[in-house]
Amino acid sequence: MSLLAKVITSIVLFLFAYTNALADTWIIRPEESRLGLIVTQQGAEFEAIFENFTAEIEFDPEQLQKAHVHVDIDLASFKSENDARDKEAKGDNWFSTALHPTATFEAAQFRVLEDGFYEAKGILTILGVSKSVALQFSLEIEDDVANMQGSASVVRTDFNIGTSAQVESKAVGQDVIIEVSLVADR
Image (cartoon, rainbow, N blue to C red; front, side, top):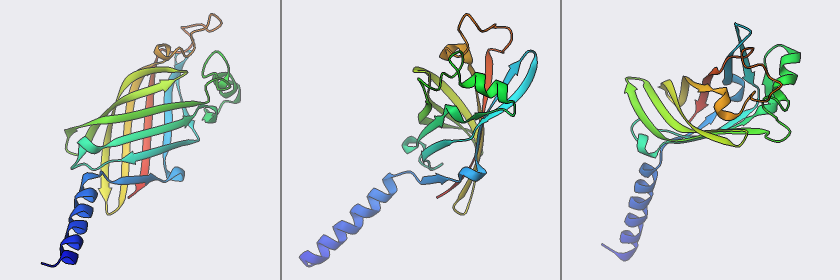
């Protein structure tokens, strides 16, 4: 085998090994994706969304050890269909968006729960407080399009949300459900 053939073979083998070493990269479709919350206020549940968020997703169901997700959430994009609540949520007693405009979720630990269902363990950071969170999700991949539905439960006061003396703790429930619905392209 000539030197040129050996070099070309080495390059091809390197590229093949490098490509197989990476998880698939996914680009979310923002107009078809949703990041929301379910919260209890004065005994009644309400839903809210974050209109603006970005996600960097590396995920292959066959290579979970190489999966990684990083999500940035624009806290000022909180929307609950109640203008007074939305304004209050962005203020100092709750998300304090002037001081902490972004929340993040970063996960690199994934496991299969059952066929089509997974769990991502990661770190959620809100108001500068970081806590471990487990997000359980279903995933369907058809051709190069992924549909993901997931949820996680957090305690808002663990992140110092709504803990000021001005906020009546019984008015807003402690438990918050985070809901995620993503459509992404490979």
